Image (cartoon, rainbow, N blue to C red; front, side, top):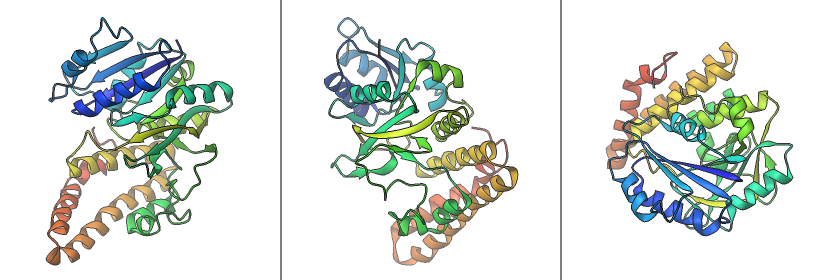
Length: 316
């Protein structure tokens, strides 16, 4: 078996069903198994999947319905422990496979074993480029630009938006520092050797941590334009303040793990600056814009919960 495709579902029933349908439509029969972990969804995802894809007709599909939300990292590890394929392929439920993308990605990995971690190109539903297929490693400068809004203002600049691939050409294979977990392929032996994701990353940051650990072990993340998927993004976590807290916590964990203490402290300080700048900006705009008042309340909630993401060892 070539591919063990792992999908983690959490309250994304319709998106997950569409994703699974696209896998079957665009992937060579008999070349893969599908392992879907439902992280205690409240929308009937597990039952809907079993109804749409009955086991007697789809024996390669296994649904693991959990009674509690283990988080993205731990759920992937759970599925990967049962994987029988030559490659582990992580695929988000809010994606749609296009143009034989998974077959193409596996073929690219086989033809180019010198890298080790592989991703593709992502587009939005309208076909426009979604640059979040991968990222470059954060630096104090890149985090300062994000915190102050320079990265958003100069979105396509490699100077002011250095982590993003928005200004890159997508017509060639490119090495990156981080392949995003929405579409990530790695040999099963390498996944096992790296011990998969670190479950201390509940959600966000686990793919970056894996890629940075892999790079230290001699593997190289790479993106190929030959494998193209739709990635909607953010479907499983609608509460924006909760999402931001999880994101900030993951970034702080990542900084403290992979950078020297002084650099990590400076990077965490950029998270505080990010929050303060947004609070000030939305407070200034609030008198004239109701939407800005709502955003200010979101960022105020993030600031009030800073002990959840700022303090060393903050719990997931």
